[in-house]
Each structure stands twice: as structure tokens, then as C-alpha cells.
Image (cartoon, rainbow over all chains, first blue to last red; front, side, top):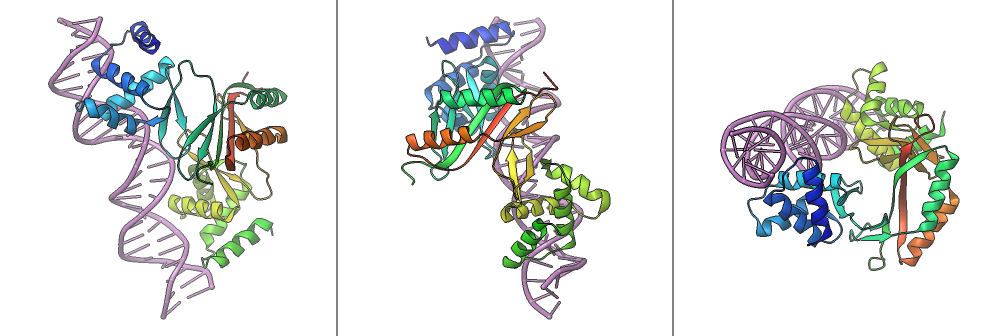
Length: 141
Length: 141
DNA sequence: CTGACTGCAAACCCTTTGCACTAAA
DNA sequence: TTTAGTGCAAAGGGTTTGCAGTCAG
């Protein structure tokens, strides 16, 4: 069994919550997806096999997964909240193609370090950051 | 008269639009504010002197100011669109205090250059980017 | 059993639109 | 006069909440 399920059941137990069929199913589906899904997309995927699961339950479960650290919320400013896998994934930034909507995940230690320094210069204690670069990907140029 | 008004009237003329009392008032109020205001905040400021101006007009005017390049829209992911002065202001990033909500504007040429390089490595043509660092400012540490 | 969870519908909240009236040009 | 703009109210669209019935522990 994937480590993610252990983390989730542990989280559930600690909080005195319940490990329901719906939550198990939604987590399974989420783990099967690519990195970025909206609640709506995930809901449609879940419904393929479990028609009785409601949208609201998907939404609430994703919030729960966020709390448990298994998923991260991303907001590209288009009004739609997306979720990405977070367990055993290091922090990364995004290149977002404005034409095809494709996301590329990137990591640059040097940039991260410069950000730290910049924050220090302003006596600012950073807890998290978000770097998004919008433009055209190689296929859309 | 401030250069911003010339830009706006020029923009208005070119587009075949009209320079109304409301638009003049909203632009004036916007220019008098600090850097970041939501439509709601701006609406309240405008109403102090012009009670008959509606919220929707403020909203529509801000969109117009965005089009004219006088203001930029910022979205910190809290569901509220804010507007910042853009004329004669270079691009900058934000340090956002999660406790007091204060914004610090920062510029770092080195980071910008590294971002360019990173985009190039992925054959990505960047058009704009957004870097936001969340944390605690010096007063809130 | 019992209290957390579900699913529905309805509420929320910011943003956007429709429309009759108003006012720039 | 003509046509864009205004202000109200109402609609949109994603997210959140209330609640009666359901089910995991």
C-alpha cells in the first residue's frame, strides 16, 4: 500500500475523524492523476467509477488532504483552485503556457537562495513563496 | 496636471470612449491612494466625496485603467483583486506579511535574470511573471 | 449507539452582465 | 442628437455552509 494512505489514515486517526469509502476513493483517484487537478476535474474522474460521490465531498476531502500535507493548493489567478501532489515532492515553481495551459515544474536552487537573501535584506521571515512565469511553451511558440 | 491624466484622456480618445465625471474622480482617488487597493476599498474612498458613484462603475473603471496601462491587477490568492499604480513604476515582486497584511515591493535584477535563463532552458518564452514571498515582516516577527 | 460524514440545495462572495436612464461629444 | 456610460439589480461561477439522513468506529 502506498505510503500516502498510511499518512492519511494516521492523520484521520489523530484528528478523530473517519476513514470513509468516499475519502479512500477520492484519495486513490487523486494519487492516480497527473500533478494538477481542479476539484471539478477530480470530481468527474471520481464519478466515472463512483457516481454517488458528490462534488462537495470531493472539495471537502481535498481540503483535508491539504491539511494532512498530501496535497498542495495552487492558484494561478484564473479563479480555479487546483491541487497538486505534495508528498515526497520538493518545492518547485511553475512555467505556465498561456496558450495551451500546460504547466512545467521547475526548480532552481540559485533563485531560491537569492529570494532568501532578499527577504533577509528586508528583515522579512519567509514561510513560503510562489513563483509563476507565464508565457509560451516550446510547442506553442 | 499629472501625466497620468494625459495618458488616460489620450486612451479614452483613441478608443472613442468618454471622459466622464465618474472616471475622472475614480482615477483621481486611485492616484491619491497607496499602492494596493481593492475595488471595494477604492469604492469607499470615492464615496466619501461622491456618494452617487456606484461600485460597478469603480470596478469597470479599474478595468479600463488596467487596459490603459495605468494600473496593474494583483491577485494574492485571497479571492480579492487589488490594483496597484503602474505608470512609471518598474516591475517588482512582493513580500507579503501573513500577519499584518503589509506588502513590501522588491526588485532583484539577479533573480529576474536567473528566471530568464531558467525559462530558456525549458524553451519557454516568458511574457510576465509573478513572485510572491509570504512570511512575517520585521514588525510582526 | 453516536457523532462525524455525506449529498443536496442553498448561501456566499467577488465579479460580471442586462437594461433603462443619463449625459458626453 | 447619438451612443457610450451609469447605477441598480440580478446573474455568474467557484467555494462554503446548513441540515437531515447515513454510516464508521
